Amino acid sequence: MNDQTTVLGTDHGRHDGPARRTEQPRPLLIGHYRFPYGDATSNRLLQLARCAAPHGTHTLVVNDWPSDGSVPPQRDEVAGIELITLRTPGGNRVTRMSARLARPVRVLRAMRRRGVVRGDVSVVLLPMAMMTLGNWAVLRFALRCPVVVDASERHDRRQFRRGWLAPYFVRHRWSTFLATRLVHRAIAVSTTLGGYFERRGLDVLVVPPQVDCDEFAEPRPSSLTGGLRLLYAGTPGRKDMLHVILRGISRLSPQDQARVRLTIAGVTRQDAAELSDLDVSVLDSVSAEVTFLGRVPRDTVLTLLSEAHFSLLVRPTGGYAANGFPSKVPESLSAGCPVMLNYTSDLAAYVRDGVESLVLDGNGPEDVQRGIERALRLRDEDWAAMSRAARRTARESFDHRAWRARVTAFLDSTGAAS
Image (tube, rainbow, N blue to C red; front, side, top):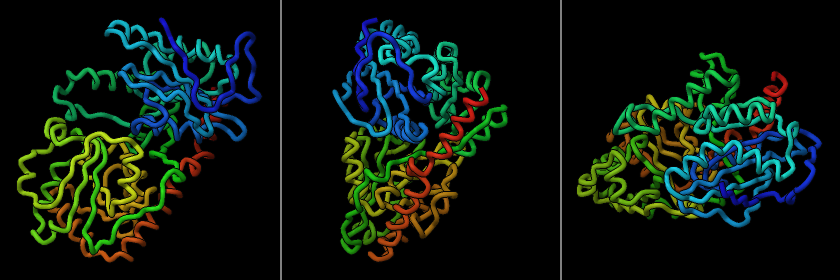
């Protein structure tokens, strides 16, 4: 295996020769994403890493960059963590599979080159998608420390066109099964998902998606008198009801539609037609301005949030939506962009109707219609108060600094129990 190890983040230098011991054991997080600034899973791993280490230490993150043709930045400083990025040649399917199977060994080898030895790591935190028998066994027994899983989703077979025959869904359920048999503690993204693991005997800490509020600029939308700017940012798939949003807009009066501008970032019109619930024929009945941007960089998403009056999110109420927690909500609130949504998961515990959000009565087109009509009646000073409340809620409830004490205590107690 021709690994090329690229060191990113807090640079403590390359250590060859005798291993060194750290003054205090610290957590180890492992990923295989476009870390640190990729998708929602990358962001969750980043923020957990920032709040996992006790004061005076840095969390060690070993990330196996995906073999998808993308290239990690040569250098990217990430405060609060020590990052090792592994790179593996793409190759054919057999090469990629062998690299995946050898991942725990490659992780240990990279740690040894950095000088990290047994005793330097207090606990291993694995995303649920990486909870395999090989990863668990090699890391658990080589490092002699407990393994904790981070569960951020529980998929439903109805999300997939092939149902139980979808390979991704089968792997997801297998990883969940292993976690309930092999580990004793888990971090869960919602109380519903946490309850699933608690009923199977695990100790659980519920941690919603986290953000770094300091990276969000002050909002700067135009006056509501010039029209209502709405934003959907993400990849809807079957979890976000994009069709319902467009149907709701189509039910507005022509005068109201003329005042609405919807930006859809993350998918093209064609992708939305093929990969989401959207029937693009509904666009013919919409006179409001609807713009598809396709996939955009994260910086562009942050800019769009700062310019929007509301972000839109409509989801089913059961299954995946009940177990997960939309990361779009904390990010929107952090940008000072109130959210227009229906309650799913734990959202009712964090966002209040008329304060930092406009809560829809349900997830039907008529609910979206009424929500947008409420937004159109707002004055600029009303919206400004909601924006301030949104940023305040984000800092108090979702910023990684607000969770540090609870996460470190949970992981410390995991090591003590072991």
